[in-house]
Amino acid sequence: MSEQPQKRHSIVFTMLRIGVIPILLLGIGLTVYSQFSVREGMDYEVERALSGVAHNLLSTYNALDGGEFSFEDGVLKKGETNITSDYRILDDIKTDTGNDVTIYYGSKRRLTTIVNSDGERLTGTEAPDGVIENVYGRGEEYFSTDVDIAGTPYYGYYVPIQNDNGDIVGMSFAGKPVSSVMLSTNYMIIGNILISIFVILLAGFIMYLSSSKMVGAIQHIKKFLGKLAGGDFTQKMSDEVLNRKDELAQMGEYAVHVEIALDDMISRDPLTKLLNRRATMVRVENTWEDCNFAIAMGDIDWFKGVNDNYGHDMGDEVLKFVAGELKDELEKSGFVARWGGEEFLIGFDGTQEDLVDHLKAVTGRIRAKVFDTGEKTFSVTMTMGVTIKQPGEEFEEVMNRADGLLYEGKRGGRNQIVVDGAEIDGIPEGIVTE
Image (cartoon, rainbow, N blue to C red):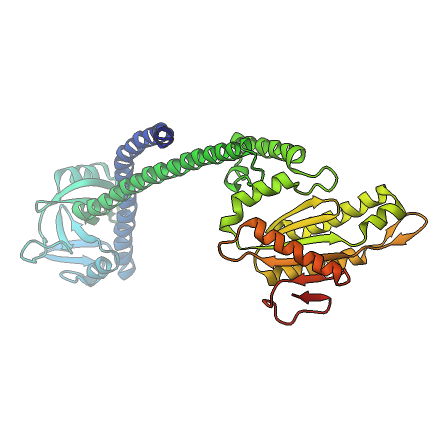
């Protein structure tokens, strides 16, 4: 017994090692890969966003005045419109997008939302050499992930400003501090790491549950077979085993089939398929202490006359019918046994009142059944004695009391249910209280 828990844990942790270690390595690999892919993806998204802002800035000024940009004597114009020191458009765009914007004329910032540590706008400052080379030298739009603006690294997107003759006279710029982008990137990376950790833990938990359930199913089968070997046919195979979709469910089903076959051979009356006396005593020994049994002893009235008048084959048909009705009505809540001849013993795990209700229903169906011999028809009735287990009583005491009540009913005219004591209020017609 002492080795059983150790063996179970060995299976569980072996499965955890097999399942979780590869997932752990995969999680580490995905985390490293995600750092590169997230940064690359973020760079692409920032480039698209800044490109849109830079083009929008230029389009807004073109809508303001269809003329060309010009700069003379410190005055920046768009067509005939003096836009020197007019930051309304730039500040609105920054408010809407969160990005800094700049209008360059030549290589210098003429209008900008970028400020220094004193809060002064960085107008008049030069564009980086690399930007000038790409935009002015090649006439191309340019994106950089590391533009140095007054000591602060920026993501920057530059769009050339061309006059009608095709000359590039300036640039429309949109930028975002690298630190703000990195903050978002780091949040995403941390999120990916947390997701990886969660997946690893979830996988480990699922593996633990799966292996625990598997070992638990094996233990259920072992317990089932152990009791079966001891002659106990009262147990049920756990749904935890039978509902599985693997070989353990098949093993459980095979064990159930073995139980049914052995039960029929050893525990069941060959004619009625009810429990025999031996199996009943095994059932009682296993359940008596834990159940609040009500006990009934029942007898088919005038059964000898059935055999004498209609033959033993018809008597067997009556026994099988009565047994089937009793079994269908009562076996799910206890047990039904053929106690001998035409006598039946019923153990009901519940109240005496509930047992009487079941007996009323089943004896009513039995009375209503018409047996046909081909030449004659007949029906049968039953007499029942019902009592309930009292604290500390042994099975034999309760059974003998029910048997005595049965014979009280026979002496009282048969075809009735005789109930012990006055526990039932409002006894219906046909039920006698002793």
